[in-house]
Image 1 (cartoon, helix red, strand yellow):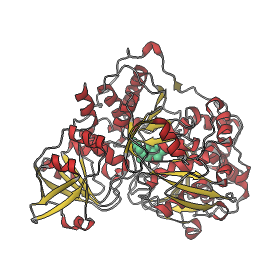
Image 2 (image 1 turned 180 degrees about the vertical axis):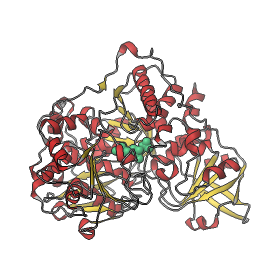
Image 3 (image 1 turned 90 degrees about the vertical axis):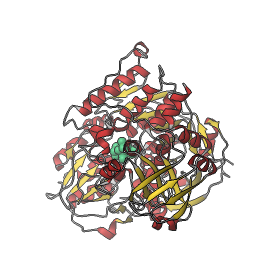
Image 4 (image 1 turned 180 degrees about the horizontal axis):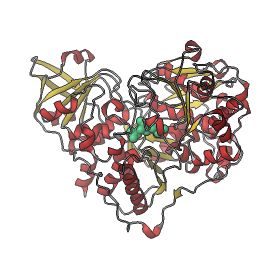
Length: 640
Ligand code: MIC
Ligand code: SF4
């Protein structure tokens, strides 16, 4: 009576038991990194002093930092390439495509485990993989052959029945689930998709859904591996890795969410949160300035072919800028071979590189007060590069229909999309993939440009200390708030001293200055602190600034682990009402902290108000050991 998640975890279990809430270790078959988290991950791997990766397969992608406005990004690419060569890792050159799309096409294996230094790694759940996003140092540790640790998740069933109607898309399914579950509903949960509706969705459509499961805060999302999976793998020339996988018929779930695809309508996530979802029809007629189609959520061949079908013999509205970024070169080539690229060009679309591009603010920032419709997964405040812009997340169908009309348009009932078909066979394009070569493994010097600085060293927590509350933040603070990413900051992902000057500035412009003048301190926040990206920079920059602890109502999963990995203490309020009892500038005194961490309850004496605040620290045994040792890297170094 096991569900699919339990089956794959049971096959990979190295530590612990399959009891929800308990910390477990799992063997990792595959890893992926991308460039904006990869520079740190490979510096950390270097510090682990191994000769060669111990996984079945590891891939280093370049897809985020593709704008080369100075030498920094290219220098980082060369560093990652040299690390890939030295450690026996596949290297996907810039221009080859977005890590999650390429991984699905060229490497994903049903039933295997994958961790990636990117929060959207669960995309590969569309193929029946157990794929989880993690901080760079966790991915480095997995490459070094160590187990990956998570809290054994609870599993939620999403039961799909019926079939999507014309103009309604896989994206609308996940937007609907987000509306129900919210951005914090999935913390330490896995969403497992079942029901006869699953059979009507191709692998890239399933991957759209598992991709955006990251926005639920989920550990991952997963689809069964079935004949559709076999057909997808066959189209990629990889049928040999297929195996059928599904939950037992009497599998047990925490709860079931029912989605009737026959009744679903096009949905849109409004600014500034992916769970701020309403029906597209409610916004119909709103004037827009930009439409962007792409990102790891919606850049498959099918997504783009659907758009081309509607654009045929039509023009993009004169007041709209339409940009397209295909998910991989293979997709771009197929669009070109089939004449679909010409449709985009003739309609007036701008075709960008195969990469993350506008999704991570690498170009295409909207105009001031602009309304931008995007097929992406995140619309956090300021992420587009324009603070006054409003970003709406939609399906490719809604995006393209709106680009033509110049206003938000409900694509329900448009039959033209159905002319797009998933191909039986792709012409494989591995030109920009470099395979590991035994000849260079363990013998290649790492090339480090001048912008590549070291990894800040975390220290074990002090038993007694007093520190100032530097800032008090609201609920749902994202990692984009903590460590903003845009075209000017992304080139510094390997330069923490530089990045630290921007830490938390979208929420509190004075934060870096306050942290520096106080010699560090404490962050206080509301619920779901650290949601969003896997970037460990959101812990490394605070570490560099001397942040010792974060006290929040609750934490997002990856960020909490990133804090522990970097020796920053993640504390939660025993009574949420105490959030109101701490103010910026208050002095908090901790006494006998080490014993209290072990006991799971920490007392902070508010020296400014005279009040004692009881805090929880919820860590698995291994997490506790790591924290007390001063983080993962320090603990690995100590072992040596
Ligand atoms: C994102 O979508 O926010 C990113 C950029 O892909 C991040 C990784 C990063 O910050 O480098 C993610 O999702 O983990
Ligand atoms: Fe790239 Fe955007 Fe996907 Fe992150 S969410 S991996 S930035 S495309």
